[in-house]
Image (spheres, rainbow, N blue to C red):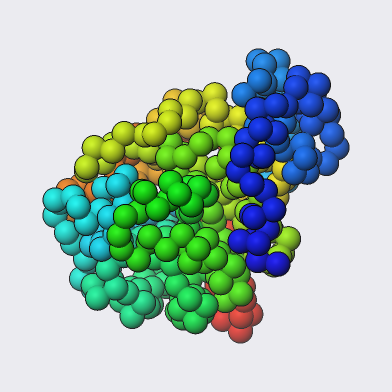
Length: 377
């Protein structure tokens, strides 16, 4: 069964009614369940959760995370290769409708960006592009990956969806992780938000994580862009999707991100406001549903909020981020996808983690692990 077929078993209206109809007793039962499954997940997303129950949820999420991951946070940095894009996404700074400085990095600029991040200490990076295959397609990505892979132990991509063969080319080139947000699981809203361009194909995007799993990715990341669609249903479907991938592709690690809409070119305003409390509840509920997934929090969020959410289930964070091509070596922030909120340097953030009793993990993987012959004697 594909995830598309799995998704059809959970109609949105029924999902929303079950979440909103959860009683305090349902929430208590979910909080006290030894193993939280989909039936309990409805209750954990309920807006009826009170302060005492939320505190209990947070405590349990913290305990599970400490047991499974220790007091560690893996650090990574996004490296934007191109902001050229043919999509008309209404909420994105890279939208083809927006007037901004378009740029695709040259080989020399790719090298400079990678070396700047390497000098900061990063060994895990996330490569990003818009969707303009004539400027930054699969051939371009393969070249970029091979140019910089010796500098990093792990590389992931957050680019346009590919077919299985395209993803296999990425794995062969040296990529081990994929991040691909569905944005919203509501097909009608998705169609409205993506009026033209290749990204307008809802089903092709929805099936991309499965194609990546078949292609052999070691990590598969997903999530919804919070603020676009109904919070309850998009949150539920994110958990359902992650649970499906974790079971089907059990050799791969599944990760979940929690991006909220940030100011960007075009001035898109969120359709719904997702509060800090709701974000906290979602992170903790997903930790109970999926004890072993990686939970990722980016510099979209403020330093104060990231500090507060640190103990509640988060395992990976970015630091010192730029969302514009060329933003590290030249400090040129024109043409950025969105404005970041946490402006601490990687070193400042690492020091803060230590002050909280956490260890900043700059590297915990190397592709040589897959081929022992490449390891030093």
